Amino acid sequence: MVTVGRQLEIEAIDLDYQGQGVARYENYVIFVPGVLTGEKALVEIKKVNKNFANAELVELKSFSKKRVHDSSLLGSIELYHLDKLEQVKWQEKITKETFSKVAQMDVELEETIQDDRYINYRNKSVFHVMDEPVIKLGLYLKNYLLTETQQFVLADKVTNKFLNTINRSHMPVERNALTHVVFRTNEEGQILITFVSKKDKVKGLDLIVKRLSSEKEVVGITLNLKDHPRNILGRQSIVLYGENQIIQKLNKFELPINDRSFFQINYPVMKLVFDKIKDYILRDSLLVEAYSGIGTFGLSLVDVVDEIDMIESSKQNTRMAKSIKEKYHLDKINIVEAKAEEVIENYHGDVLLVDPPRNGLLKLFVNKVLEMNFKQIIYVSCDVKTLARDVSLLSDKYEVTHIHPIRMFHHTTSIETLVILKQK
Image (cartoon, rainbow, N blue to C red; front, top):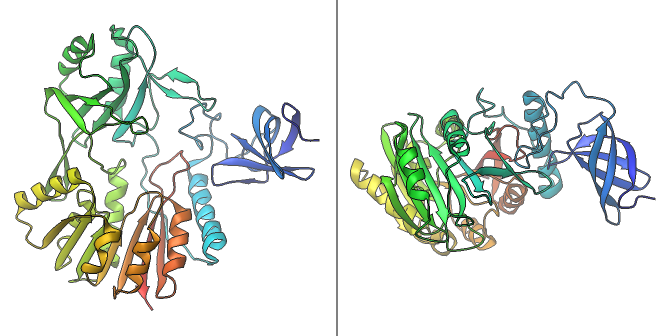
């Protein structure tokens, strides 16, 4: 029988959407992180359900030719051991399977949007502050233990420099006062550093700020006040050095990004997505952009459309979008601070562009859109399951013309997708 604690020899026959090896043993499906298709392994059962079990890798007995590294112990890079080209194939397979299961659609995929930066691509990284008398930053392992991290393979080189600088400084700091440190960089090699705390005064932090501010890359250092246990960042930040912004260039625009702004983490790949959307979008159209954030999609398309209505619920994002509009005299952009599902029926256009959070589009929003008359819908998704669900809900009126997987985050199981739909 398959019981907790028992060790078994298995052979993986597939990789699931979480990057886990999938094996069969007796009447059970066994899920094992770190094992690739075709590999044999000794595993230990950790959890048993009715028809499946979760196991932990004990020892690999055979190795796939597609394996390029040992499996990472970090919980954030689930596919680090898999060849980068095979990671793309995995994402394409998961995308097709998900559309088949969720939407009952047999879809054909266009080429995957990606670039050749497989490491050091993140322009924003968050590290946990460890419970130590001196400041130490770390990441969680797959077993949920926090470990000191000197270098993070996905973070860009500037971030890694300052991660290493902090961890090697051995500078004393008030214990349990800081929760996280957030690094945000731009393509100019500048960095904005944010310390996160529940307190507005942290003993020892002033000396750390003095040390970091002496580095030429640092444009600002802030203390963000954590105000909710589920959120890393709170609503208020205190400037400790420089200013609370870093300039991100988008074509001819300079976007002032602060420590709480949402901005694409792998910006070079996102620019490729902008270019692809520009290839497909109906020219000289009225564009309605829902969940617009600070308006990066609209700004990237401003030269090819006649007018843009940007709908965004975040006061901070709309404030920033308005400042960009005013700075560059973008009269064709209309910024609306509201929840998209509550006001979408008031904004008719030719093209609807949506970039929703992971839970996808609310059914109320979809129902209202189906009563409107958009000729084209452009959907940028960060969750393929909710994407397939929403495309299925739209299918009475809209048909898919193009699906591009986006390999935004190499070595992870995050799946981004671009879908173009047209009215039937």
